[in-house]
Image (tube, rainbow, N blue to C red):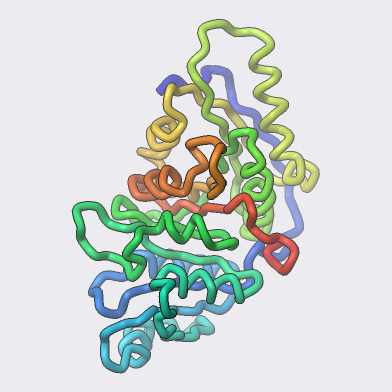
Length: 291
């Protein structure tokens, strides 16, 4: 990876804490499976924002699944927790059932595992988490098998690319950073360049555009440009030794957009990242309480 050698830019000041960009956390887990890798992250999101947590299971084979899930969550008595066992919808599969439920919950944030490689069943969403990213219109936190639960994330990094998908992700990430009082960094991955000059000024202007709301609020904001032939690989290289970072990415399900923004590539980044990856679809509704 060839990151830019110029210093990153920072603005910092105190800021009044606003509301978060979500009012409920939804965590789909499989009671039939012993490991609930995303549960710790879901609890952390709910606890930080002081919002309810809904645990969902779709079409589980486990007898008395609600009691089993209640036992799993018994130690978290400081949270408002709801358990929902959803019947599998006819002809739409577990992913479709979950997406229908999530879309009916205004202001919700989904937290789930990525689908495991090698055919190992780690999540109730058999077609992989990219199917959910392609359908759901809510922000989704993905927790991959490389995720390390400690230390907890203490900074938000937002990767933008200049596409329409970057606008709602920047808006959501800014709201989250302001409300949780976390430092915010905007980054963009561009191909390597071999000459210096006005390109730095242009790159700074683009990133400053996304950071504008946080800057006006006086929040701690940093931005920088990274250079790599592969944007996805550049992101993973930058994240490889930053397990305490909460990564924010945009995603778009429509054809003809940046390959980086496709649900499958986004899910792949989440699958290999050391920390959680919060994905904001380009068509996320931010008018019903998400913002």
